[in-house]
Image 1: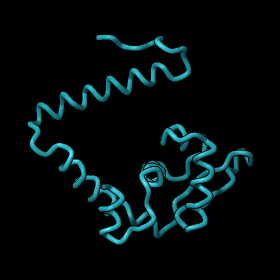
Image 2 (image 1 turned 90 degrees about the vertical axis):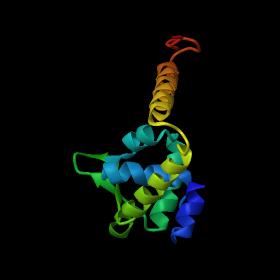
Image 3 (image 1 turned 45 degrees about the vertical axis):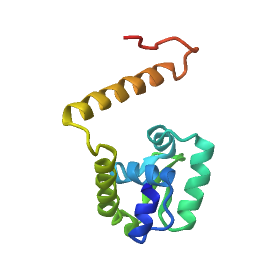
Length: 136
């Protein structure tokens, strides 16, 4: 639905994963690939393929970091930085759709449950199954 709403506004080449990448870059332009992978939750091999396509389409550019030429920084290109207001508009519209008919207290409770679930999953990352799972 998010991609469809973007398409209605003239953005036709945006997938959810691409949107995650752009969102992280809007918040932290010029970050290393490893940090971008961690912040998007994308596997490095998947991210590399997506960055190749984003670079080919002119959304991003890669730059060797002056301090360590093995490290590559990812930057948004000028025209694509301007997509943020439109992306934020669609995000706000989607949030309104998600929470339609819910009281503010229900939204707060739901989001706190999601945060706990995310915490449970993050606790499992890199551990054996069952360790670190919150049961409360």
